[in-house]
Image (tube, rainbow, N blue to C red; front, side, top):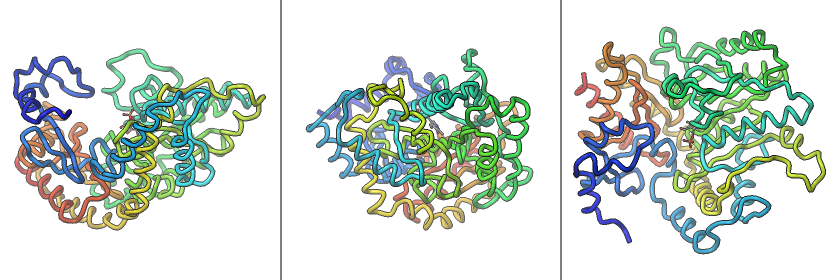
Length: 450
Ligand code: PLP
């Protein structure tokens, strides 16, 4: 039975300590619980909050509901699967949805990435990819390749592997202990050269040569892989200059280093094709995904693995387990059924193409915010965007949070703030009127905050 909205309303309006039991992730718990934002329902482009207000979703949930919310086809697929086969053990056992989905994903992926290892989240996908990389090198007699290169400002989830690859200081410094052997490329955000670029930044392809510096420093034969987000999402939509990713690919190839794209955010149409790898014309050796794979409806992630990496695991006796790694929920039937229905919607409604068709309008409306108080940069590509605000000297992050808060409470719009950057990634079903509403409301709230 559904919890009636009136009970939820009571919960939301009770004293903060009544909400205390739930320790919320990446949240200022005490601040939130003093003025909770409670979502109770969702459909299409909108959430509904506990007061019955429709909230326009400017972020596809958390970059994941690319087909919009509560899509009937996905709901039915989950319900039917739950009633047919709710769970199948993941080890030495399988179920048709997992095999069917792996096949569909391999067909969608860049050529050569034909094997899928399933997880339940992006963090698990990243840690799985790191382990596959390490095991691959050992199988090939190159066990000295244990070092990873990632990038400043990167976000690769919250596992110990992903945290070590991550380059956002707040996500690391609280914990002290880190996996060793990781070094960091320079990030590609350069407001002095590229502020208010429309689409990809004009300059910065040469930043990929920073990889040469790290290779010289560490000796290429010790480096296992380079991990990058083609577009760094959580850091505030940091885009690569044309040629940057190609250059990383070339340098990796010269030195036998694997290239891994973390496409947890950029996958499934966000930039106009199934994966950013295809939009940028660069094929990695492994590719991590999550979020949009199942439209956020049931947790699902995974690693797409290239043929040659996969082949190195398939050399031993056939009765030997090839990879001592996996999760109870790898290939979960409900998640895979949700993802199969999601991929049907993406294809039938041509939602990936829509991110290109609407891209120009999105760019135009977003860049109309240039000139508003404190706006120091606007970035866009496909159907992703960011508006960067100048931080208050005494309280960095407070301006972004205030805009986010006002958008929700006063503007009935969900945006995401990461520090003083407002990130936008609407469901790909968004229309032009809703783009006007997103950018119009955001502009109003930026003015109100100034
Ligand atoms: N990698 C990237 C690029 C992400 O953006 C995220 C989450 O936002 C993750 C990994 C972690 O995914 P999850 O939160 O599903 O563990």
